[in-house]
Image 1 (cartoon, one colour):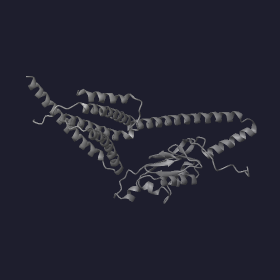
Image 2 (cartoon, chains in turn yellow, blue; image 1 turned 90 degrees about the horizontal axis):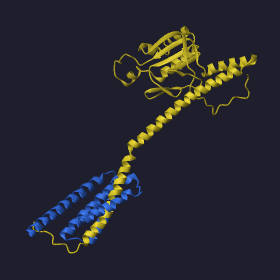
Image 3 (cartoon, helix red, strand yellow; image 1 turned 90 degrees about the vertical axis):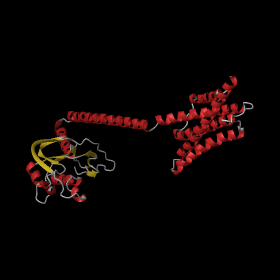
Image 4 (cartoon, chains in turn purple, red; image 1 turned 60 degrees about the vertical axis):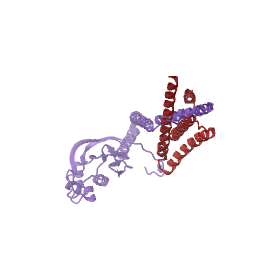
Length: 248
Length: 118
């Protein structure tokens, strides 16, 4: 090395470097702080917050559901206490019938249990429409429910979701929504009515369940006594109002 | 004397404990600006040792490089190209080059002074 620097005349450059070093230090500190802040406030943190919120809401929901059930029971008890006299008994009977019709009361009686599941058989050819025939669709459930009501079923539930006047059955991707609640196969349809009539209605040749029987996707058992739960959701009428000109 | 810039660094670092908060989106730009600043400081020290130190070049170099690096990163973010990496590679290379030169000068200087003492 022959090019060694000559002794620096004056150390003024060192002071300038020092001054800017202070700025650099500040920059470094800010950068470090911001980086750490970014890491702390990053993805995992947000996920934690979201999952905690979700769990909290879920728990709250469950508590509210429990509370609702308790309140309903309390109301039921109060109504029965209040109903005295002949008129009271009459009204009580009417109320019970309305509730059964509306699906807000649990019921039991003879009926059938229909179980729908995806076919155990394999389609001969893997084609989109062929494969589609081997799984249960919302329309299968809808047809069966319709057929059961047509043959005199008095109460029906699908996977413990009670069919009521405003019930809907529809397909959402891999699951089926019944009363806006997700359910998945196997679909257990309970129907209260005359067991023989209900069973024969489903076994009609060229009937709604013909294809299902062909592919072993349906099983029907007659039961002397089955229980069907009450509708557990909320009933809200925002447009419909009771008509003044009620004949009753 | 070599401790003066280090002391300055420590002094500046004290701002870490000040209640200053910057949006975390600025993190990558800030780190790039820091790297550019480090490059300028190393370049300044090297120039000082070589006796070629120009205060105007040093000052403008520090300010312009720092802002330009951050701006470049921002531009890269805008057009979807990681210009950040280009800046990091270029600046990092220069920092290492300058550091190695500083080390070399320092070593030869100490060797010479030892020889003179003997």
